[in-house]
Length: 349
Length: 198
Image 1 (spheres, each protein chain N blue to C red):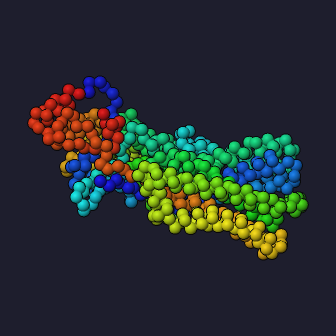
Image 2 (cartoon, rainbow over the protein chains, first blue to last red; image 1 turned 180 degrees about the vertical axis):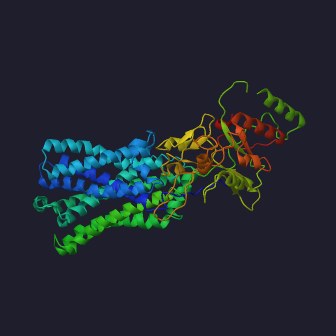
Image 3 (tube, chains in turn blue, yellow; image 1 turned 180 degrees about the horizontal axis):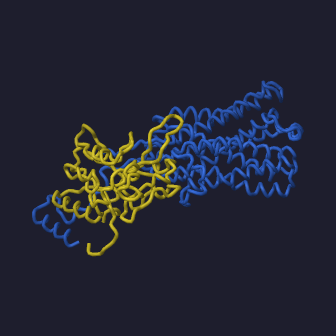
């Protein structure tokens, strides 16, 4: 007999949750990059500027993401005061609230450390704090979803790492775009001068290169994820079917796989070839593959979150008929004698 | 049965008896002031139009280890001493986490615009009202009737024409079910039979 398949949607019905998951994951990735730039960049002012300006990027992202997260609530006014009202410390919604609550001030401090040219020891200490915090931010969004154990697509084995990799790849793309864009922003005169001198664009190719490695890992992880779903319980197979052949297949194959993963990798191969072919290092003629690649990675990140949240509408099918009750000492035919014994057995209980 | 332990109120849906009359759905909405677009109990049909067509009414099953209570960040969902899972609409923030945690689709939310639905979660109360004072106007408005405080069974189980929906203490429910199975000579199923009813 068919199982009962429930479809329920709330988070996928509006833009709030997918965009929050994207912005939150990307901000986590950005903070990891900012910390790594500070820790491994040495005294190079370029990496110091990369660290501070990337952390600065988190503030608008988290403002938009946090607002989207709060406004999706049925009672937003209760969500704003989560440290007061939320009491179930085992719920990942509350843990996530606290992660955001620490994440934003630390991002602010990272940016302020660059702006006010803080001592290097202080900056390194901040970076050491923010590295696990950025990872926690990426991970928690995955764990938050996978805590809903009756949603087969949201597996705890794969989702947190997938979100970490996606957060890292989109974070790298955002930092690389930021390296070009930040010069155009209306900073105070003192900061603008330092940004001009730092030569931040020089870091963009390196960020793009690291992104290739992360994207490759993401492809492998996504493959393992879908393969595991395909070989899992009936609910998992249903989710895999929905993802690769069913309602979400176009979003998955076109949005996540082609635009978000394969095309950026192809463009990364094209870029050095184009430079060799045209014998040029700079300019739009050889720069467009990098430009397209970075934006496609961001697009892929958004579509991935949408696909995962939409896929959550499918619940683990309720097995039907449900678990059979034990028939107390009744033979298959149910003779009068056996029935009498059974009723006696019940009454004795 | 001799030992006295706190009651554990449960539903049991006898799939061999449910005839999909929809009486439980109507009675629930009528009794409980249910917000528009929400059904606290609904009849699901399996294998419709084929041999072996079966119907099953699905309310909140008032799980002993309720996943909704585990994930609720504000503890708006809780167990009453008699095992009924309640929601406190005064503390619920409407995040929707319970909707994804529940295997039965019991927690439901008002349907909204593309910019988000407003309002808190609504679910089956086992006709036991809410955390407010019993029979108060606030309780009536937010949760509906409080038949448990009146010493009655939930409305859906009371009106079920074939007695497919059995409600009451888990032990009592299990006794009724065993008798039926013994008389019928074939098994009846329940989700969580091994743990919830005993």
